[in-house]
Structure formats: structure tokens, C-alpha cells
Length: 314
Image (cartoon, rainbow, N blue to C red; front, side, top):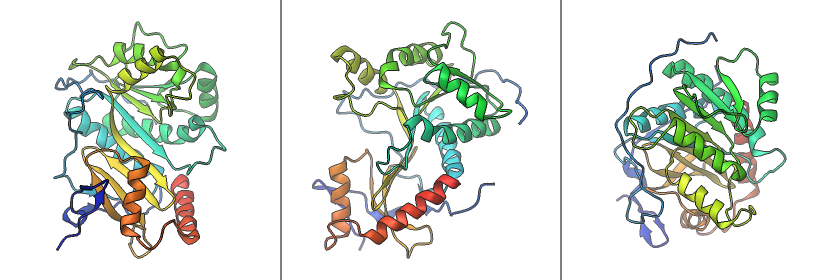
């Protein structure tokens, strides 16, 4: 009989019922492509975050994807997820990867740029689309241009971006900050208007807008941010936990993976949900599968740390 996982008193989908596609741990393995006409997509407006009756958009018939073993593999999965979301009418997309485990040695922007580079290169290679990368300011753009040689796309700071003549097929916005939400909304409205079949893809990567209550923004600014972010769909999410990983690859559900040395991939699926779980719910999931182990062991921390080290190296 299949085991049922419970979170907050709600019975989840049987964990053993869905096949898992293993990513497998493997090594990582440009001339600009001609610009193609912008593609048309079916019109669809994501449900508002204030509409509590709206069900999250997941497809439980889709085989689950195992934890990717590298940034390169994550970028490939994210591009596939973006393609699937565009077919369903989503144009405003979010990709979040957090492997810091709370380590704030480097800024979110610095941690995100390697992923953004791989992601942009994959979009151009696989989708053959004209791409513009948008970073928080002109200083960050100058540093990226200094460090990246012969890249097949343009980079511009959000503070210098002209909204009047936007022609790219895809905009990759890297780590926009809370103070830049107004400019971000103008970009979204100009390049990726809701309900437009000709909207460009607008992909936010690791938005740096964590806590509305401590950013120092006024009520109007927080409402603007809430309203804007309610129009985006999270298509790829990977967050490292002290004992495992929280993962979502569109159109599949949110999945929780436990560090497990007996599994060839290093992780075992223990829970899936149609929505993102809170920190408290994640701890409940862990407690349900480890009733005699109230907190992760030091050996588990060591294994997770080794995985993250290999992951970041690709």
C-alpha cells in the first residue's frame, strides 16, 4: 500500500505513485543567431495572488524531475520549463535557485550571474531567440561585460534601459531589487503586456525582494511589488535545505527531496504539493519521515555541502 505524506493535516499525493526522471550527475559539457520574428502564443493571464480560489498551475500527470546535479543541468531544465509555460500562455516567468544555505558571503547578484550566463546561452542556442539581459544598474552591466568575453547577447542596466524601442524576443532580468520594482513594472508592461499573444518572454532570475516588511518600502511600494509579482509564474525553483532540496520544474508540482546516500542520485522523493510549502510545512515533512531524528545530523550537513560544491562547479 502506498504511503501518504501529511503536511499541516492535509494528505498529499502518494509519493510512490509518480515516476521520476533522474537527471544523473554528469560533467558540463558563439556566433549570434539571426533574429527571428517574435512568436505568437495563446493569451492567458496568470491568476491573481489575491484570488485564494485559484488553484496553482501544475500537471500531476507529468513525470517528476529529479534534483539536477549542476547549474548547466538546471539551466537546461529551466529552458524546457519556460517553453512549456509559454505554450500555456505564460510570458512573465520566474527562475529561482538558492544554494547558499543562508551563507551571505556574496550578494544574490554575484551568486546569480553564473546561472544567468548559462541560461542566456541556452535560450539563444535552443530557442534561437534574440535576447537582452537586464541587470540592476549600469555598474553591474559594466562588470559583467568585463568578465564575459564574446557573449552573443547585450547587457544593460535597468537604470539605463530605454522602454520606447524594445525588440528582443526574451528579456532575462537578473536579481532585480525591491527598490527597482517600479522600473521593472514599466519593463513588463512595455515588453510583456498581459493578454498579448505577441508578448516577449520576461524571465526574472533570483529576484532580490525577499521580505516586504523589512525593506523600508512604503505601503504603496509594497502593494506595487505584490501586484506585479502576482502576474509571474515560477517555472523553476531549487532551494537547498539542511537536509535536502525543495524543487519545482513547470508544469510539475513542488517536490521535496531528502538527502539519501542509498539513492543513485543522492536524494529521495518524500513529498509533492501543488503549491510552495512554507518553512514550517517543510519541517513537518522532514519530521514525518524522520520521527526519531529532530534535526539534521552533521553527516547530512556534510553530504549536502559536498553536493552544493559539486553543483556550483557544474
